[in-house]
Image (cartoon, rainbow, N blue to C red; front, side):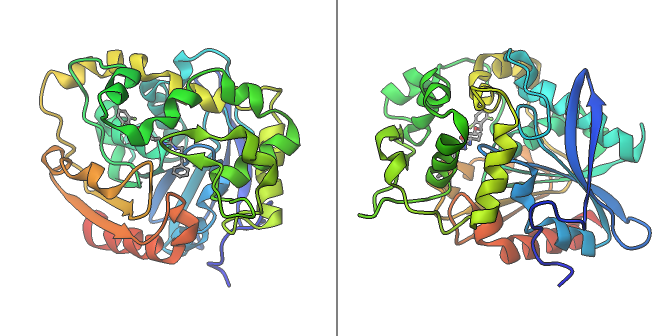
Length: 334
Ligand SMILES: O=C(NCCCc1ccccc1)N[C@H]1CC[C@H](OCc2c(F)cccc2F)CC1
């Protein structure tokens, strides 16, 4: 039906590009029947592409929304600069603000949604561009408050804190992009990250270990991706020169940059004034719901929901996620 999830190359959306602050961004554009009630921008995470929002796009169009879904910097049809600066949360926020204004003008507003690393971006963007954001939501990612002191992740983990982020020490290093090159390795990597297991039920990714590279070739297909969907991800990543993961992994190399850019925000209490929604995933091992326990003091109007799904909640609990977003738009945003 009209709200079935997008398929690879789906003609219900247009595929466009735009020059944004010196980079080429590629994005899907879904126009609703008749006059758009609002414009919503959806921001994906790692290792994903705009297609990760395939279960939400047709549904949001059916609410009368114009839906804009970029491949984020480093991904798919979007440029992948080699240096780290363009991947800071503030730089990415400035890119998205410019993309949004192409649709709503200098004084217009958007609804903004993010998943995973996209969730980290959407919680910072309104702090830099408050007038632009009519409502903001995140799936899985809690609000990370700006800090006044920098603690390297390695030191934090050595204290036994945030051990669910230990895989990020591997991702920010050279190993992952060195080991995952070419279509076959990319295929194994997506199968691994999207919950694929070996024939004796072993995963090849664990948040407290990272990717177990020697297990990659014995993984069975992930139940979360069809063969066609998996091939679409592989082709999109293979469009970048090896190491294809360098751009995507640069998002893990921005912690110090983000801290420096956050400094002015950390001087005063940060409160987001616009309607906000957090949807947590009960089985997300990297971003468990309890990470959101101290969020409320940073929001004037926060709605919190949870779904019984893994990190890949957008597809695994698509209808429930859509119902929560739709209900929040109707009751809090409109
Ligand atoms: O690494 C991520 N996703 C890949 C793993 C996906 C997966 C999980 C579980 C099973 C299979 C696959 N996501 C990041 C998203 C940003 C999060 O940091 C938010 C943040 C800031 F941005 C700034 C300050 C503090 C702070 F916490 C950290 C996890």
